Every structure is written in structure tokens, then in C-alpha cells.
Length: 258
Ligand SMILES: Nc1ncnc2c1ncn2[C@@H]1O[C@H](COP(=O)(O)OP(=O)(O)OP(=O)(O)O)[C@@H](O)[C@H]1O
Ligand SMILES: [Mg+2]
Image (cartoon, rainbow, N blue to C red; front, top):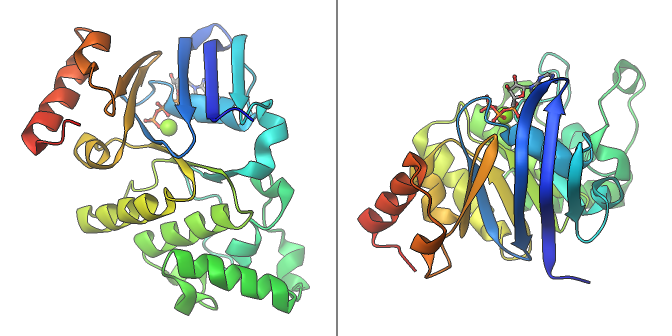
């Protein structure tokens, strides 16, 4: 199998007549930590949906682990931009994590029937959920209601849910929006830990945080500009866009240029 986890080739995508993504080309290798930045409406979530197979490109190709995105779903963990769980329902942390315990986890939503006629989980399933929660430091909260947790704790549970099917690739769409700077740093530290076993692809608005953790930064504003921080020929791929200056400046200030 190719060591490339994500291969995006000349992808164009429009919603009706509105062009959202133009000629996007990049790839991501196994165990790379990639961050996507860019303005609101730039097309970041659209790109993520193409990678999940929830949208199809108008032209070009998207391959995940050398497969069509739809066929790769069981190998992909996804943390959506907006929490897709109704916080008013009396759903526990365990319930939320179990939602990730299926191949169809991307479509899964908790139905009212599940609450009226609660499904008993097997010991093996509970053990699996517990060990996944341990990875994100939330094992002590397994019986707590999801609605009672803080934003940062809830986001950790969402990451545990995405890890439940033991993915090779973890995609997170702005996992730290509404989380304070300390919580944000903790989530990124967690992602760094997880990156030992997984390829991480995260959408984030915070360039300062992102440039500390990512090996590759992709700026998307309809077009994509790839900035490989692990590559010494950094300047060679630079374009005269403001974002490149920002990325380089950030690297210089941190003395992180590798
Ligand atoms: N379902 C849709 N139907 C029509 N247009 C859409 C749809 N989803 C997104 N768009 C448009 O496509 C463009 C890209 O949206 P997208 O959600 O991918 O941006 P984003 O970079 O994720 O923004 P944000 O930072 O606000 O999350 C925007 O102009 C948006 O209005
Ligand atoms: Mg978005």
C-alpha cells in the first residue's frame, strides 16, 4: 500500500454555480501532522467533506489510503466542526463514544428509541470505550451526561468517539473553536500524542498553535497553497500571498524552522 494517506489531484468543486474549490492538489504521507488554515468560507469544510466521501468532486480525484473516500470510511476518524449530538438528550459519555464503534459511524445519530429502550453494551464494548476514553484522559467521566461537560471535555469525548474504530487517519474540523487558549493547547498536545500512531489532519484558525504542531500547513481560500515545514526549500514553494509571510514569520519567531 502507498505510504500516502491522502492524495488530492486537481480537484474542483462547486455548489451549484458557486465555485468552492479550484484545482486543489496536495498529498499527505503516513504519520504527517497537517493543518489547514484559511478564512471563513474559504472551503476548508468542503475539502473535509470531499475527503470523507460526503461530497464528490466535479473533476479531479480524491484518494484516501489509495481508496475512494467512501470505501476508506472505516479507516477514518472524524470530529465535525459542529457537535452533532443533541446536548439536551440525557446521553452519557459512553453512549457518545459507542456511536463511533461502527463502520457507519459517520452517519450515526442517536435516536430517541435508543433512549427509551436503552441498549445494553457488552463488557467488551465497554472495555473498548473505556480504553479509548483513557487515551483522551476522560475515563473517569464515562457515566456523565455529555451535556454536563465543559466544551474542552466534550471535545475530548468527540475525539474518543472518532478513535473508537481504530482509524489510521484522524480528521478534525476546527476542534478547538470555543475553547480557551489553555484548553486549545491541551487538545493539540493530545493530537501530538495521537500522531505517534495516526495521521492527523486538522482544520484550525489559530496559526500560532498550528505552526507549533504541524509539519505541513495548507492555506485554503478556494485555491490551496501548501507550506511544507519539514522541507528546507520552504521559500521555493512560497507565493507572494500574505499567509506565507505569516507562516514564515511565525517560524522565525519561534526559531522552529527545521
Ligand atoms: N451546502 C452548501 N450549499 C451551498 N454553498 C455552500 C454549502 N456549504 C458551503 N457552501 C459555501 O461554500 C463556501 C465554502 O464553505 P466551507 O464551509 O467549506 O468554508 P470553511 O472554510 O469551512 O469556512 P468556516 O471557516 O466558516 O468554517 C462558502 O462560500 C459557503 O457559503
Ligand atoms: Mg468550516
